[in-house]
Image (cartoon, rainbow, N blue to C red):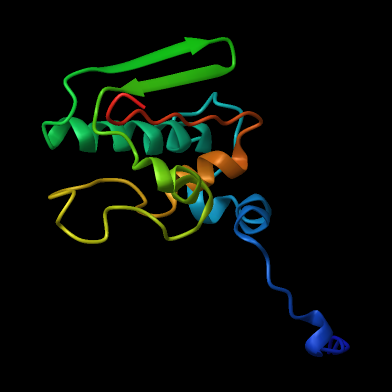
Length: 136
């Protein structure tokens, strides 16, 4: 029989959102991989960003989605409504935060609502989000 270890309050940890995603990426994107397999997590990360653009397109808010691949950098741009400017940082850095929890702004949506862009942010070596609304 295995020797029991000591389990006390000192063993309990609370991780911040980024630390949790980085420690347990498989919970969010499946396997890590190097991009050579179609089920590698890198494609889930790209899909999460694309899903947001597709949601805008389906809602009639954007007529164009541009995807550019430059070496290891992928740029996705849509011409949708844009994230409300006062919430851009929250939307990409606070778990379970997003505009898809009711049907007022989005009638339908795909992806990991409230998690997707946070996983992209946490697991990317470089992550930048821009939002344009009302010319700002």
